[in-house]
Image (tube, rainbow, N blue to C red):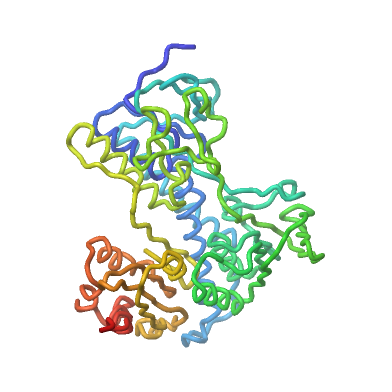
Length: 466
């Protein structure tokens, strides 16, 4: 083995947590190597969160064209230019890449393009994308290798060359008929966007409903939305075989004998952590049955001096979860030098937003979870139309609901409406500070904003029983 190059820290993967850790340590004067085998900055700015929301916004604009008469706008003929939609997305990605490179330059963290694997304790061999290898060593190694779309072992599926969330963003022509495997939130976002661009869309879901883990009122609202937009939904679907090639002609065969025909197929049935072929046995790093790196609540793996963060560590599959993983590791490294706090992943608050139109935003307990846990709550719920701003937008579909404890604390909040993800921080702050819901109820809220809906929402909370 060649003499390893010595570093203060090695980070494998440049996703949200990994890149911020690289920039943080590099800016402290540490010698940092950030190993990345695909895209600088990871999936989010290149092929996931931000590009998908870019395309979804283009679809929102298309929906406004279709609804023009509703707003008193008379327009002539128009069409969707998918090549231009893709070019807009790429311009954003290019700008984000420049921003990332500037941050690496400013922090002096080194990007090493290649695939890293353990070959000895504290030692990483990188198969360089440009050819050759480098051997790196550090007492501090951090794994942020992310995840990828799961391709289920359905006969003919892999051979059909299905689209994932990566390839569908790169389309420059509109699918005639898109078949989507999976009725979770990723599948829903793309289904609505492609339908609004003009494609025929069919969602094929193995469970009895779309987004089956959500509360019944959320499921009902979203399924009605999709039906109103002309999206076909097939539930309780058991796929026996896929035939053909995506982009040409493809057929999904179901166990009940049905044959669903389309031009393209998109797989959106889950995520698989990228933890394979990394020499983990060499250094005693264990994985979970689902394939994630096994970590404790401080994100330490089973090998001393090695941490994992983000998707690959089994954290919630959100970019903001990975960023919080970075903060936990950052602060615990500082604590080791007696300058920081002891932080863990236990009990952390994890918000989520699904960028359908209208959005679905949530934090804390759902009603399903509260009932399952036997947690007592009072329910406040209003239609979105009660937030008067929604009427000015002509976007009244949806609702707000809140779960309140017997002690007047907010247990959970769920809302469906236009841009409602922006409402979450107010609720999160009240929950984090253990404030009663009246702390939000009693402040002066600007009229007419969506947040003003909190007044009617909290008015709808039943009074405490005597």
